[in-house]
Length: 305
Image 1 (cartoon, rainbow, N blue to C red):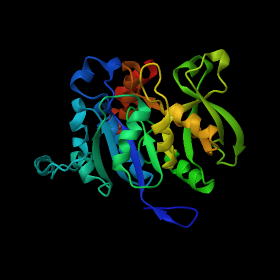
Image 2 (cartoon, rainbow, N blue to C red):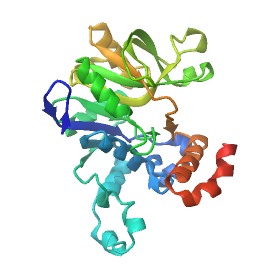
Image 3 (cartoon, rainbow, N blue to C red):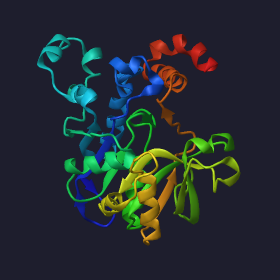
Image 4 (cartoon, rainbow, N blue to C red):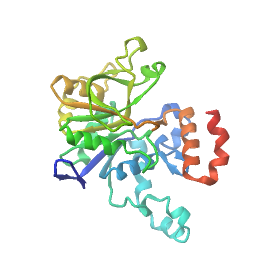
């Protein structure tokens, strides 16, 4: 349960979309979902789930595909494995089922066909109760649990401002704006010294650098009220037949919805696992942070990536 600033309580819940084919990670992604590739000693998806659990999330829907139906096994209790590591605390502590997050429930939902991120969120609705929910991209890691508080800050801002949506943003160099959804920022709001918060007057999907309205790029974390589902149901598919979450957010803004943005904290990193270069860099960073014994082995690699 999350105790909000308005004095009421609610279950906090989330959707993690993990249905993508991971084509930029072939041939590994033919056998292993990219979300299960290791970052240090844990799979990336476990880091995302730990981040959400640390923020107070109690219920998670994993939206996946037929080919990745078993992706949630890392969160299940396996008695044979538990018994085999019973006397090895250094291994037992890595298991989700032995950690502090056992209160979290998971439900796996199949997205078929795969028609974009907005469609994945629609598919995830079946795992939710009525009330706000987080969307956390499964191939985007903000950091180790306890090292990032972005989702907590999103929840507080959502509550304090009675928002319809809060989106996390990172500041990117101009050369990278064409890779992301970019905010058209409006009036600023009070926020912690190491973050910025603002009204989002619009979103532009992958703009050219000369037409980008800002350097605020979507950082793979969203918080929505259930109002977003009405806009997802009515949004027109794009040229590829996909239902884009950005389009639904744009329509929500045009309809008078209050959509707010908050930046990652100063020094906070986003790790995108969509290609070999970014995954390799993330692995090195997590290996060095997670296990002091690996620091010397990864120091040279980190300087080269």
